[in-house]
Image (tube, rainbow, N blue to C red; front, side):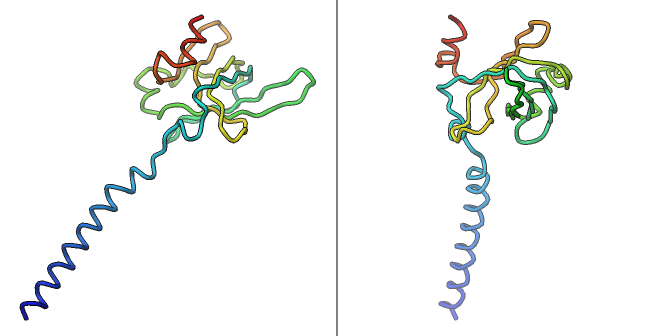
Length: 145
């Protein structure tokens, strides 16, 4: 009887450890580093018309259309911080669909028209930096020249 009871206790203990392990590991595995998706050492840019601004989790999204010199249109999707960060900074209502912005970004490694937004220059000349990386980075050095 004693061995049966201790076996049950050990099995229950192992089950609890596994559950605690899953609860603590899964959220970490679900979150990703932006450096895994975007080339933080490169800077892309385009001028485009904002077609959609989405305050969604986990990252805010801006969708743009860039009209090339030959008349073709390319669609771009930029991501940024979470909605809470933009709300706290008072940046929720400054982006207007239909306005044209100059955008700099860290390009996606896969070559798609995706990026992690760095800066946006508004039609009135205002520049908003939406990038939280190290100020000694390649981007910061290039922007400060």
